[in-house]
Image (cartoon, rainbow, N blue to C red; front, top):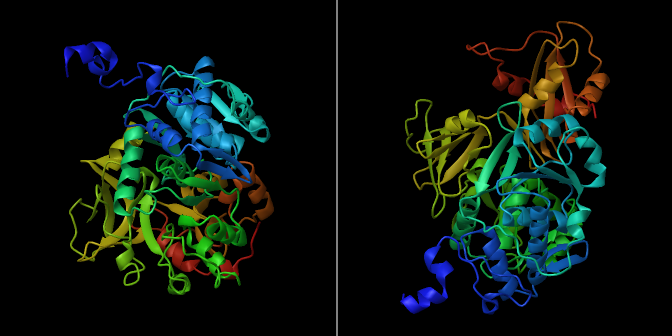
Length: 535
């Protein structure tokens, strides 16, 4: 580079990691400057210029284009800075999915803060633990959530304050995002009673998105997608970032309604659709499914549970091959997707990893196992989490020698195809939401008179799995309705046991003296048929 050019562009030459605009010729028509860095926000600004009039978000008829959304994000980011938010500060959000919520998430990243979504279905008790662990500097919530945070000592603002900045003068936040800044903490239910915060950076999330675009390509040109998962979950937040970076049009749906979803698939020419098997089962059961025009749909993926043959065949009859995925929050999303060409021959398998992601199966001693041998699934790749927030011990246990130890059981066959078998971690997946059995057990054990408790999954026609509390009282009578009321006060409704089994004898035990959940799962395999629902 010549010395003359260096004098004209000193910031670019002297600070290559801090690329900033030198004059208005490099700014957009809306006054928003592109951030030429490997960051999520830089992708948004790119689409603001190249897909300026393309709808980015749509919810209930309310829409915002990429051009307008970029300016809104900048205004909110500058507003957060004016409120005293500094790089690295944690901002909690507790609300239903909305355009305002999506904007807050991207604006927090733009200001250098960390967005830490909270499940709006959680109780005040659950939320208090998470907020305290995050050491949050600000909570943004809906009015209906306000009372849950009384006395937490963290400033509260109404989500409507974000919406009020949808229009206005152009703004320029002071912070320049960096690729390796932590931008999100997702609370996940693991094998422990308390949720752990999974951390991601711009770089880890972009690695996931880049690999997905390279491997599949269905969304390289944008297109319509549906987002129904709550933004408080990894599924919801990862989809938001994934589709925004790829310049897609996102149709946000507050609840799943089979006919409504089928109508969107057809009318909006949705390109990619993924979710729990229950979504696809209910859509396929509609009388309108057989004649629906699904020609635009290129990718159909399922996770959280195995695809049954009847379900696979129902969508195959429409020319759509359901592809099984595998992943977890700590892996950054789906770490492997079944290739389309192999989906029909191996509908139960999850693919062979990604262009940047490896898997292997190990035994209890850490030895890699031969093909078709069950063991723990390990994942290595650039999309894997940075670690657990404020929990170095759990991070060290989970991330070892460059590999993510998933706590899941699986196999890899001679072709390298992965089959998910079971979860070592004691998690119940109900309607796509993770429930820590240990967290439910802790709540149940706080109820007077219960000597032992084990929470396992019971089958459920609607949600695939639902919590079943197996309790032992030493022969004393148990007031089940009072127990459920006790749990309702401490747990989000989807975590509260739907079935309660009162045993007349102590729990079965393993040689280690731990409660034998495998034995309980066998004993109560038909609990959904033999026990009454308690809620």
